[in-house]
Length: 495
Image (cartoon, rainbow, N blue to C red; front, side, top):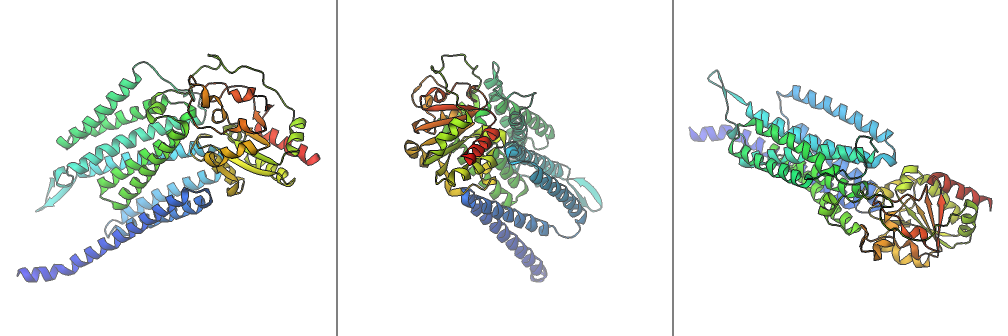
């Protein structure tokens, strides 16, 4: 009898095992594609291809999950399909309508979407298990949640809720700061006891996650954790200045990955676990790179409040800035043999990347060598300048990072700084009282001639004046970056 039962169930067991093996192999393929995509994203020349490879990996993972759902659940499939259509439509509209200059805000919103998705998945799965029912001899009976969720799943549920919630609201605050919202200022917002309050909320949330393990039926604990996480996200980001947004975006991206990985443990989905872990790890690595680029610790970025200094509040650099006209600057540029262009946030705000490309072509038509100096934290998100210049089809080989380009400034005839401020301030090398002291900068002051395109003499995000502007070899060209660069191109073409 026992042998007959085993033989009878063997085909079903074999089919289930084959299905599980097939699904696992498909998820493994998706993970490999994610890894290759991330590897390609580390280089400007392969970044676009890496994005497509990663998208293909996500398509494979989604398709495998879709086919995992068996018969009797077509209603669920319909709802999933509707949700996918809505999401795809929204994504297509954003991809087509959001300009490259809006990418920092877009990335912040996408991080927030990842966070809230993890929170909702964790809470939804908990409610499903909490409300599970079984039919026993025709009698409907509630099922103990512990039959479906061990302590590890409950811990993952609490962590996904906590990290996902703070990622959501933190990303919304980052978006508001990047978009110049009148409700949330770009400068750090700090108050007495802020750090203590953050610590209390964080410790309290983690403690409540522990309570959920001890009391699995206490659904209200998850509600409290969600609320605390949402408040915690606001407090964590509101005290950070605009100058530190590249680090914040990288960190929030890491948070969204970690939250997704926790949601993967909740759902027992290996693809989600691997994907979240890759995003979380790469985000932390990028955060570390950004911090090193500013010579700051992560704690100083999160709680230092850099950018809140009042302009002119201390003793600034002494001297007089020299203003140059378009005509005078074009004469010097026309006589140069090598020019290094240094793009910054001012170029992004003015949407001057295409004008810069046309200007570079004018120089190259005169056999003038043109290169671009890219600082890791120039702009408002990691790789901001690379993205803008790539949109204008600037050749990848002309984009040089900090270590590559700094030794070349001494041989450059002209360094043209377009809206970059703190990343070119020589005070970072010698002024121990400066908030940017020790930050690796672009050595533009070592070029024979430096032209700086700015609207005014206002300081940068760090709230300090740039002593580069008062150097003998520096000339200021005041005006909108796009107009000034276009006028320089016109003047060169007329010579």
